[in-house]
Length: 91
Image (cartoon, rainbow, N blue to C red; front, side, top):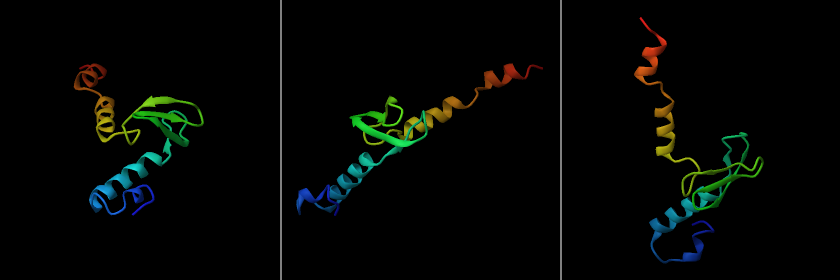
């Protein structure tokens, strides 16, 4: 049991306490800034993340700055569409 979930004692069961400890651990980790690349992004509030180095503010997930759905959508939007590919290679 970690320090963050130790306040619950023996209440609520082990799974919720472990889940809570993992969530708190994810929040407190420093993440890489998308602008400057330094490991200095911290959570300011629910869904708001700030880089301590360059001061870059951005919205992200509640517990991590980059969600799985957000990463997947960026990957999809970065791929060129079939119309863009066809316009680059006219026959």
